[in-house]
Length: 165
Image (tube, rainbow, N blue to C red; front, side, top):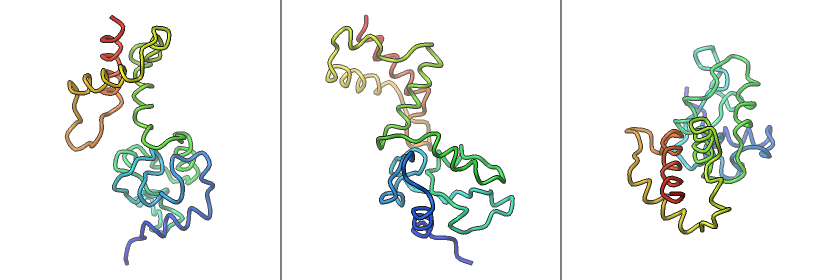
């Protein structure tokens, strides 16, 4: 039996879930991860896991990037998938992982990043240049595709270190 197509999943959920509070608009849901909102190769993710007899049909599938698919809930109760997806909704595309990096910064350094920049009148251009420079000393783990939150947190710290000395 053929697997459910991505377009069928999008068509189904666009009729059954409001896009408000999601990281993706239904018009782009065939190419952007429903949790993080990044353009990515999307995987069919079972709401009720396949291993728990979750059916291969649009009502039991969402589209996630590989990274988000690995973090998705694996429980039989279907309510939790949508609670989880909505809990991470972002207003702007391509910001989710940077925001996660900022949360990681707060965990690691017990404060918000860049808090002093405005008081010191440090321009966006200077910050951007320092970010570019700091990113040259970081890398993406093999097979991941983007920087993980802890790497982003360290890059943010290096930017602060350079600009606040």
